[in-house]
Image (cartoon, rainbow, N blue to C red):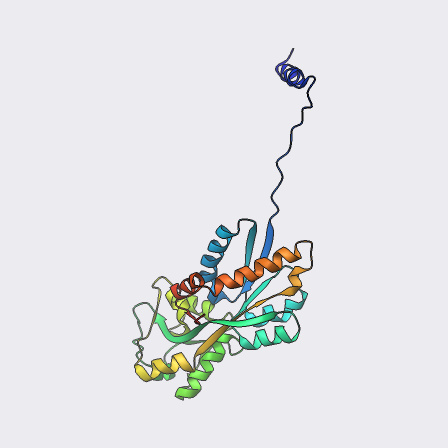
Length: 268
């Protein structure tokens, strides 16, 4: 008798005269939660998602990063997203008007700064330097949240770069170009400077310019639930998970994660 036959006979003898059943362990249902967010929120949301999944082991969060206006335009067709974190109040307003997002709440702020490659090789000292004709100046495209904040700052300070390069990819893409030395100076979100690992540095402008950056160059982030992602069999579980996720973002722990990357969380 072969080894496998002997094993089978042994099992048959042990079960003889007794109801013998082997129960398969029940598979734990996993709820998928889709979160779409602006790229400048990526580091903070990675930390928040880690905390959320540790406290909600039956939920797996999938993070999608993209331009807020583009996400908002397609949000009504998305069934895989449950939460939208926008860097554009206008984009969120549009999504709410379409019924694609509900319960919007402002939860954090960011602002732009004048930034240069590490070491400041072209000796940029103030905002007026952006008008120096020999400098390669990088600005976010005007239809991005960073670009809109930048335009407000330049208008308020009456500075106009001679030949600026507009980066359609937004603040993060422009920060990468500064780090690579493709630009001499640019205006980007301070959070992207902080996450550049020292390859990009802010220009320490004087007090009036600094206050202008904080006021005119401010972006407010808005968080909302996406009901279109709740149409499947796990719809109710996804709605509950989405509410819990939003509560975590606005909790003390969420605010600490936001502060850790240079964002300014709004008080509870």
